[in-house]
Each structure stands twice: as C-alpha cells, then as structure tokens.
Length: 408
Image (cartoon, rainbow, N blue to C red; front, side, top):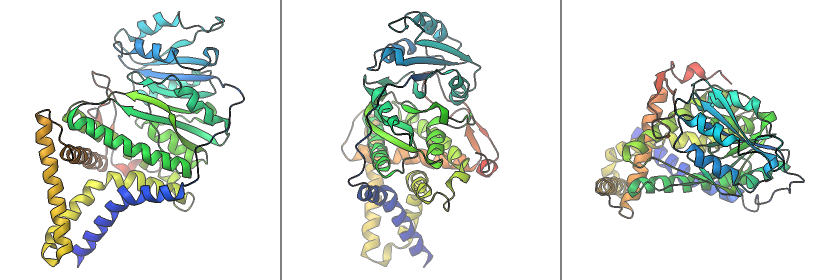
C-alpha cells in the first residue's frame, strides 16, 4: 500500500534526522577529538566586524574586542562599514585614536567603507585589507568571552585546520521564544561537537568564525559566510573545527513573528547557498561530506514536510492496527501541546513540555516556509532591519534553485 510506504519512509526519516544521525556521530566520535597542538607563537589576527547603522552597539562591541585575552600587538580590529548612514563611522573613527598597540606602532582599529550591499559583500571587500594571517568574523550585537579568540586560534597550529567556529550562547527572548532558541542551539552545538570530532563539520556561526586568510575565496554576496566558507573549506580537504571554549553571546528575536522571520531567512539563505555548491557535494568525490550535509542540513529543512506526510498517511492507516493508532495519538497529542504552548506564550506564560512543543513547531514552520521560498527562486538580498537583526524581508526572485546549481 502506498500509504504504508509513505508512513514508514516519513517516520524513518524523522527518527534518523533527529536521533539516528546524532547517535551515529556519537558512536564514531568516541575517543576522538578534545586535543589540539600548542601554538609556538601567537599569529597576527584580524577581527573583522561588519556593521550597518550600528551606532547603538558598535562602541560597546569594540570595547569588548579590545578587552580580549590576546596579545594587543598581535590583534587588529577591522570595521567594515556596509554603507552606514548614521553615526557608526564617526564613533569608530573616534575610537581608532585610542586603539594603538602598547608600543604605538600602528592603530589597532581601522575603518573600511564599502557601498551598501550586504554583509557578505562588505566582508569580500574588507578581507584583502586585513593584515592578519587569521581572520575572525563577528557581528556588532555579539559579545566574546575574553578567551574566545585565543581558543579559536589555538587550532591553527595544525596546518590541516582551515576554519574554526565557537560556541553560541543565545540571549533569552522569554517565553517559548527563549525555549526555541535554547533548544535549537543546544541541539545544533551538540551536532557540531560530534561532527568536529569525526571530521565531518561543514558549518559555522558567523558571529564567531575564524579561518586562514590565504585560504579565503570571495563568494557571491547573496549567500552567507557561515554557510559558504566552512563548506568550501571542508570540500577542499581542510578541517572545520568546533571549539567549546570560544564562547560568544548573541541577541535573538523576542517575538513569535521575529523568530519565525529569522528562521525563514536562515533556511532560505542556507538552502540557496548550499545548492549553489552542489559540485562540491559530489557523493562520489566527497561521500562523507555529502552524507553529513544531507543528514545535518537537508533532512532538517525537510522535517516539516515529512511530519505532514506522516500525519496524512497515519490518518489513512488509523484503522489498520494498534501501531498506527498509537502513533496517531502521539502526533495529535504533540500538536495539541504545541497549541497550548502557543496560547500560553501569548499570555507570557511558559509551560513545561507545551512550550517546548510549540518552539519545535515554530522552528519547523520557518523551515517549511523557507523551503517553499527557495523552491520558488527567492533569495535573501538584505540582511538587517532596524534593530540590527537579520531579516528575510529583502528577498527577490532568482529563477529557482536550478539556475544557480552550476556556480561555485
């Protein structure tokens, strides 16, 4: 019966994507990772801070970077202004005079002005001006712990390492939104730890990502650094590493609408970026990388569709036996819990289990809409709204995913 095939295919895919894949990684990563070579010297580091109208945040962010536990004469701060029209550039220039090394040889803070075109374009234009052999990317609304850069850079003692990302600690948005961010990022960080140990990591966090300057290749501005840079590094045979000790704190949306829009944008940007690099994901040339991207990214994006298929097939098979009845009641109960969690969130109440169910469904609604937009040829063309958070509102039609598959 086709409905049974659809039922078991959907159920098996969901179980594998959210439980089976992490379990496999845990098995194969046992006894691996956790060690790195000791640096013989501190390499020159450029921290690249990309800003667009961040006058409210840029001063404190630069102060945070100046306070890092890394030799002052081995670290510069390069601020790339993405067409700022407020006081951001004036604030940066004012701080540049106070950011010299202890010996006063050169300014630690420099400003690069780029025409407005988005974060990735600004990064492409600014990196050639960087003096550091290691580039560390970050954002204005993030905050590093003092040891973050030192922890990142330590991995580059191994010449096989091309990219290193740190651990994200999201700020709470309150209610189910805080639950959504917390659950999602705890799970994501778990996968990255396990993939890093097994040599399968291929993604990173744009607010705390380091890489070798001599390995960097400019990429299309419509794609995100956290998708393209680590994916290309992994495909070229360089290690992409997760470092638990490099901690960054970041601010996230605090409303249902803001979280949904952020999830849609992230899904849309990462799908289009990943599909633009299909030649790098040839399963015959890079079978393990292909399997990791399929398991970590693709199946997660398709989760809401498999949930829908499972529910429809389950309804058709309800009278076929106790197994189908049990799974149907489980699904119905889960969706009811999600509805209760949504109602509680509207009243500012957080309910155990119900709020978690709602946060999972909210994230998957974002995946669902993001996949639809990607299939329709939409792409992210702008990345910031008024409060400095990334937004999916700047989208345009690009002729479908197939139009970009040959790039890269």
